Each structure stands twice: as structure tokens, then as C-alpha cells.
Length: 306
Image 1 (cartoon, rainbow, N blue to C red):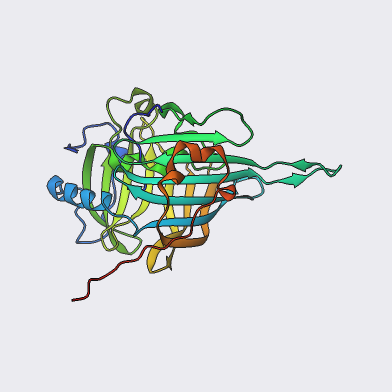
Image 2: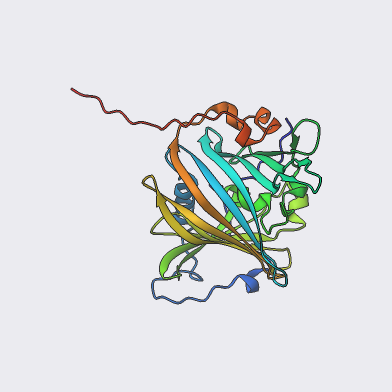
């Protein structure tokens, strides 16, 4: 299995100061006396905040039934459904996703038309990789190269780059400080693409993270090109609590060039699952998730009795 360069995620280090020509594009207006943006905040403090954020995760595995609402600016909205399983291993977050690009149907003559499903296996963290297989294509799963990570999937505004969030683990960053954002204290980080990935650096100049100080979650991501123009904004549009754990109920990806948008919604969720390791292996991509037997086992915490 061929790995792409280790710059990949979502969701989840060399200290440097900004020296690029993007500075004018990256200024953030202070709106609170407690804000430190623009005041040379401590990079050591920033590193501690970022490390804590990278280590966060949910308790156990999860199963989400998801929906993509694709909202072109000048066209009618449409919907694509899917299912997502996720967990965390020694390398970081890992997920297995099916996106139903075309549901099963019957033609005018009564013949069955098979569904077209995009199957994805996404390993995030330091040694990351991404694999995919279309249900309509023969052959084994294929590794996704870094130069195609930015391509949108299933006609949406989300790319694998957005879903895996590799920028969370990029080693070079600048802590820009704290600011009040959407009514709450938020830490801003400017993440630099890895020097060794020339293909990525030709397209991406940097990524800004907005991490909530109160909840230690990524509330917004802004992706910029090499000229400092904002390409895309990804932000949480809703939160809900399931099985005692807080998860997002909606996440939007907005193309800042075309103004087209896609909303990822979690229609149904089950948290705290003990998922089999076979689910997160390449062999799992050979068949749709709905055709695989995945036990619904809950994690249990036992306390010793003296």
C-alpha cells in the first residue's frame, strides 16, 4: 500500500514567525481587550494549545448516517447520502466512509440499476494515507496521491483535504493569538504546508485554524492560495449531544471563489462503539458498508470492587 506524504489528518513541531507576503491578507481585527492577535503572542503557549487539541478525540468508535446537501449558487440544491464509521488507532483518527453517488434504481423496462458508491478509507495523523474504490470500477483499492487530495468529491465542495484535515498536523505553524470569535474566546493558528510537498505548496499558501478555547474544538478553517486569496471556508453550523458526547450536527464548506456551498449533516449517530479492526483495512473497500456484518458492540467501563 503506497502512502502519500505524511501531511494528512481532521480531525486531529517547529515554532516559526510569519515572514511571507500573505501578512496583509492575514490581519485579524481585534474586537476585545483580552485579544492578543497582533501582539506577538507566546509561541510556546501556542504549541501547548495545539498539542492539547491534536490529542483530543471521542470515547470509542462511532457510526454516523450522513447527508451532503450540495448548494450551487445558481442551481437547485441536491442531496447525497452516506454512512461513516470512525475510530482512533495508534497513528491517529481513522475512518471508513461510503458515499452513495447514485442510489440503486429500476429503469423503464424493470431492469435493476446498481448503486454507484464511493468507498473511502482515511487514516489521519503522522503516517497518513487515503484509499478509495468506486463500486462500479473493477480492480483493487487505490492509494490517493497528494496532488489529487484537493479535488472535490461526489460533486460537493468537500475534498479529502477538507475531510482529513492534514493541516492540523503540519509541523510548521505560527500561533497568531487569542481573539473573540462568534461570542467566545478562540485561538488562531496559521499552518504552513510541508516544505517537502512541492505539489501542495504550489496550490496552498497556508491554512488558518480557529480553535475554541472553551471547548477545544476546531470551529472554523480558512484555506488560502499562494497569493493570499481565500479559497475555502469550513465551519461548524450546528452541535448536538449523542450518547453523552458532543458532536457537530452540521459542517459547511463554502467555496470563496464561486460562493457554492455544501453542508455535511449527521442525520443519525451512535457513539461509544467497539469496532472491529477489519473494518479499517483495505479489504473493507471491496464491498459496500451496508453489505458487511459490523457488530454493534458498546464499550463498557468496569470499576473494580474491593
